[in-house]
Length: 236
Length: 204
Image (cartoon, rainbow over all chains, first blue to last red; front, side):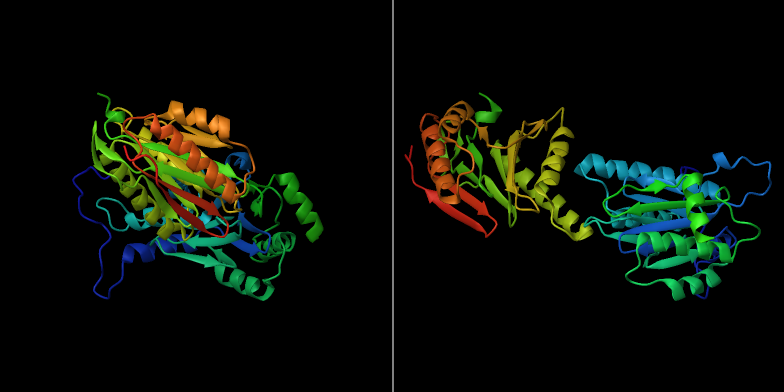
């Protein structure tokens, strides 16, 4: 990667001062399936639409929400294969941190590290930006829950609640009305499901969505379909 | 001629009740010649975190600078202090990274963690770390220091008594070692702050 004859950057400035490759990458993100996250007082939840192109696709082998450290996980909207590369890289990098300092990497450090990689791919020779926006849910060094978004440009934002991908505008409006500062994780999960359902095409079941949570003092976990079903039943 | 005894050093750290103490001699020699009697071997890395470095003088100074470099970057990035455990772990990794051309230092880490609990650790020159609850020693007269500590130490000493014990253990140990001594320095760290005292011992 990068040791070809392309020692010049493929992402170059336009006359108006834009990096068009990044804009186009953001378009790829906006076409991706919706992902959203909500940060509560005692934890964070991230959720995504896992709608598969055909009933013949086995949903067991599609995983969109991934654990990166015991205290943080990723979700994305955009180009799946690009996501897998980032997940692999971020996992390795956070293991190096653990090896170096004997402590789990705090979510903020994970975010800046990942964002740094994504920025690199907008400047290094011979590569293109990642076609994904990430949602990172995790616990910081003081144990407080946090939700971050990382864009193809390498910009990152801390959010109380946000959505990316298709329908992100209406999803964010929905979230804006429902997020409160004293929200608890259980409420947040409930709200996340409602928000996801708003823009869902067809019927939302425990098998065509994914949910990931991290509780304060807990570990990041991707919920099993049976656990999701319990929440869906409550919501109905 | 051993590279670890070329300059001479004696460092002891002890844990007390909600406090730690760390003490070192002050001599820098070139084999049998004494060059300085105020050579620092204990460094305050943070308000309640001290590192003692025993061994070859140049490596003591270089490693101290390297540690400071790493700590400063960590503090800027993470916006928090480095805990003693993390510093100890990192130091072990730094030493091992030079496994086949090591720093000739055997460090001691002493401090209070975030909940003001005492932390003590020591490691060999290639990073084999051991965390202890009572005392740790390093230098050219570890035999003497172990003997003194084992006899004089008792758990849960208050700051005043810890100081006396540390000082006596150090002074008696260095007196039977040709290359360490020429004065001593003791730091006692409590949650209120740090008390530092200089020791006047046999000037030989």
